[in-house]
Amino acid sequence: MKHTNKIRNIILLAFLVIMWGINWPITKFSLNYSPPLLFAGMRLFIGGLILLIIAIPRYKKLRFKETWPIYFISAILNIILFYGLQTVGLNYLPSGLFTSIVFLQLVLMGIFSWIWLGESMYALKIVGLILGFAGVGVICLGGLAGHISIIGVLLALGSALSWAFGTVYMKKTAQKVDGIWLTTLHIIIGGLFLLASGTVTESWSSISWNLSFTIALLFISIFVIALGWLDFFTLVSSGEASKVATYTFLIPVISILGSSLFLHEPVTLNLFIGIILVVVSIALVNIKSKKVTSTSKVLSSKNV
Image (cartoon, rainbow, N blue to C red; front, side):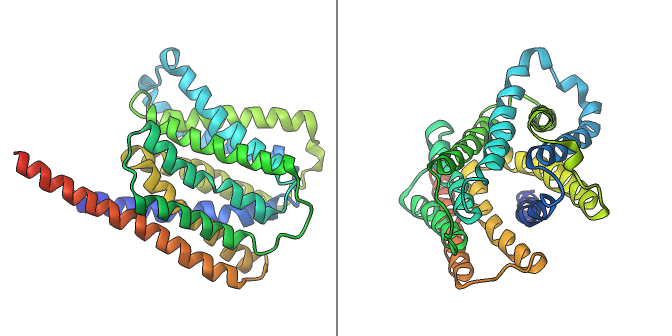
């Protein structure tokens, strides 16, 4: 049973990292045909509607009157602030710098999971988290040309903090709500808010509804938003949140490889150095975790 769960988690992690990795170059491509807030709102709302088809048969588990604050708080942290600040912030900073600051979330997750979720924290885990962030930084900061805005830095930090708090909040409330309903409603609520914001500040006539854009929109809505967020919630609910976060250090690696392949962006030495740091990061966190688990088992057997 444990072996089956391990294989399942590996498949879920691989799917999540690949989908969320290629999301960046596909989104960058799509923004040539649509204003950012409207595009963010559309992909989220469509993804939420797809999840709603899965959620409706579980309507008895919704319990909206008792649990509605959880859905709205999760939507604010994981969708509205994360995607909203991210979309606006990219106008103020080079994308490499902005991405590296946003992925500070992965380090923050390790700290917040230790403080609020009671997950283990030890020297090698701390070093692993720091190395993972350093790897992301090395990958993304290959070209820091451009104006560095304090507003942009603050928006990136806000995006990282909202994502970290949102992930911890999802883990903390996982037993109080149905996972599929939480994933569905927080995406729909956030998508509607961003659509409304885009309608007020942007123009629908600016969207170019060609075949390439439509395919990209549907792909992101189905695989990145609907299945990706459901995958992420499943992993966070079933395992250590900080360990899941550590594997997402691979997302920028996939993103840059995808950008190089589809957008013909250059692959630099930074990528290879960053990959090494990321791999070492994952090894430090997970090898030590296995040792801790083994020690716990030994102690438990002695107590028995």
